[in-house]
Length: 71
Image 1 (cartoon, rainbow, N blue to C red):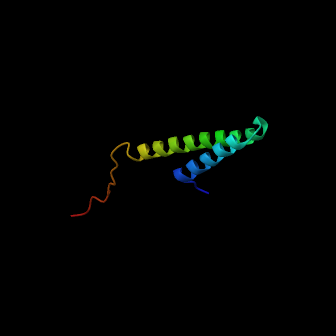
Image 2 (image 1 turned 60 degrees about the vertical axis):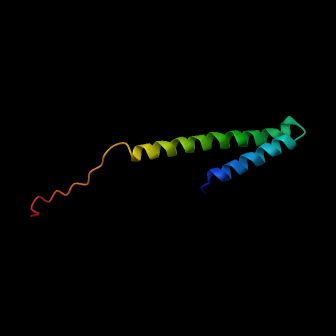
Image 3 (image 1 turned 120 degrees about the vertical axis):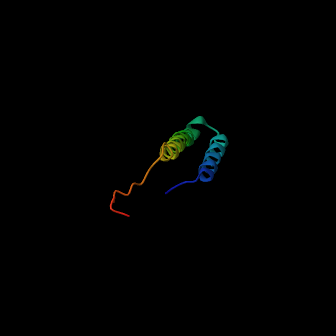
């Protein structure tokens, strides 16, 4: 399942709200762990997406037609 940046923002807000609503740190810990994983994976996805965009435009590409018999 692919998440958009808006989806990730909504999930982050929900996790932060859940963390704030917990009365004890022990109950909030699972939410904090998931939030941390989400942020790391979102940052990695954004980094690889920007690298992919750059690599697609890293130079000039030519499509040569090797047929020299065309008049």
